[in-house]
Amino acid sequence: MIHSKPDVFDELCPSAFLPIRMDHKWAPLVLRLLEARPLRFSELHAVLHRTSAKELTRALRTLERDGFVVRAAAGRAVSYELTSLGRSLLGPLNAVYAWTAEHWDEILDARDPAET
Amino acid sequence: MIHSKPDVFDELCPSAFLPIRMDHKWAPLVLRLLEARPLRFSELHAVLHRTSAKELTRALRTLERDGFVVRAAAGRAVSYELTSLGRSLLGPLNAVYAWTAEHWDEILDARDPAET
DNA sequence: CAGTATCCTCTATGATACTG
DNA sequence: CAGTATCATAGAGGATACTG
Image (cartoon, rainbow over all chains, first blue to last red; front, side, top):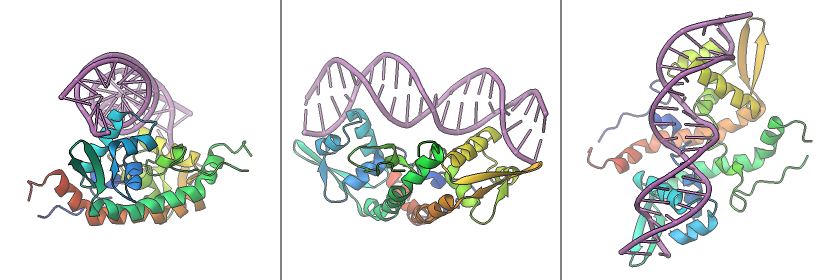
């Protein structure tokens, strides 16, 4: 089907904020965690221990909804895996993280020049 | 000075969400608008007419705070201009936008497979 | 022109407790 | 293990009116 191509400026459609704002705080992190291999819910939660099960679930549901990950239930065990769409986002996403790692100090300095 | 390098995973520091979530909805768009040349407040608002002056102001204050733009008041006229830090973010940022333009349809399809 | 000031609502997210 | 259910709060963001 034909969805109208998002023109980020003219129409100010939601794509202007996607996936810059990935609809969930932990979504981008989950995506990166799944880069290496599929992970179980508990494995994800172990790393993202600062969030609740509820929020992690919501992050995963969001990622599922958008076609970034697929949920595979094998009996008791449930694991999450990247789709090709999800994997394709890792490039740009990691580019942003790389930028952040490189310029984080400058942002902090801009926020608080005193702390030198 | 030495700010500890952000390890996006180990400490789950705020950098994990920056600038993926740029602390303001309109911030990334403002950044892109300033790519070509400095713009006045009203020029920005003309394009971003869907938001209020209050929110646009807040976006600009956020961008200033983080060292992405500088505010230059020339008498009555006020214009905003990218700093080199702000400009350096355009690369990764535009990469994400490019990804979005290319995969937006797939996300919509994932959200609503019916609409074919 | 370039904002401020208010009011208001809705959502995101956390904390905590419970379940098949 | 892999979630749900509930409660509670801060802040995001819209609408609108006002100002030097």
